[in-house]
Length: 448
Image 1 (cartoon, rainbow, N blue to C red):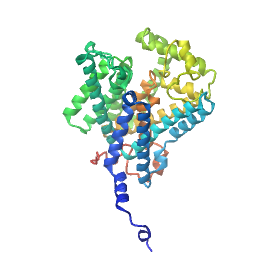
Image 2 (cartoon, rainbow, N blue to C red):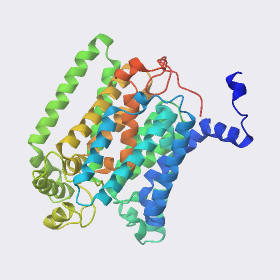
Image 3 (cartoon, one colour):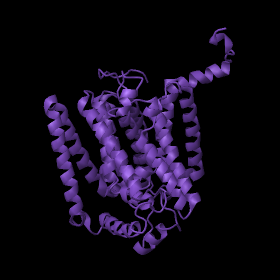
Image 4 (cartoon, rainbow, N blue to C red):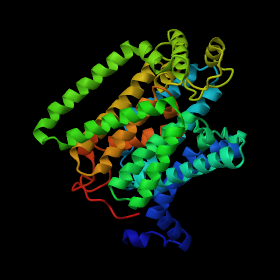
């Protein structure tokens, strides 16, 4: 008896579900829904409460698990789960054991892992171009809604929309917050949108008119967010874009030397910036956000010395009344919800072990995505390293990359980079594809 004859015939519902979870349409819808929900976390939480947002995330995780289960024959665990990401998540779970509130700490780890799982599903069912297009579609809607609400609040009603933290300052040319809660988050999202919209335009993924209007929208909101970090992000992205273009245009025999030179310049620049960090902060604006950050970081280092290796336990966002966050806020006479720096947050909560794992994951992803972007012809490959640079630079001033949308995009980039330029390539059963999901010839896929 053959295997086909031994299996019971599939019913109509089972066939329909199999076709549904196999379909490209569901993969695209899942990606759009995930990116939209996580990017709109602040607005959803303010309008419907944290339980609603958590329910949405759980529902997306269940759907993502069903998609992966249906596609389980395509799943290669070595390609699906970078070891650096797994090691980081395992260590963060271990730190829960010595946290002062294990329930809150485990909840923070669970939230981080759930978003990472959503990123894993997206990276498996969508290639780089499809992911960038989905992100572009979501950002056009969210930034458009943000601008509309700012106009409604600041011009038509001339009053704040308090529950969304929109101050209605558009008539005074900012600062704007949109539906993202703070001007710094709006600034980061706008810079990410600029990168994504530019890639869409260069790859002809959208019509030229749509690309131009999208860039103008993102540029306007980035400028009038009045975020002090936007200028730093724009400069960093511009420098990396120039360096990337320089390497891509260089003859193949000269690229290695050029890469080494650029790497040396960046390393020296980082050392100099750290050595002169206090004068730089004074130049940027000693009485504003940067001084607040420097004061907070100095206080955090005091508590890091008490638990330098293991940290105080992973929570993610700071919890009120929990050690050591309550003491740090009391001593700084402020009410911080994070360290305003992702690296200091990891160091405080997960110790030097956690920081080493986090840095290794990010640097490996950046290096791999950079090498792929300089070696491949299509400009779509530049999306991953440019996005990584934006997230890692912003991590110096905010902790957005450790929660919500920032963490989702970071993990997507890590996964895309981990699918190439590593020992996994030799074990892959699909040697004909590259990290963008495109054929090695660089052709752009036509499926949805």
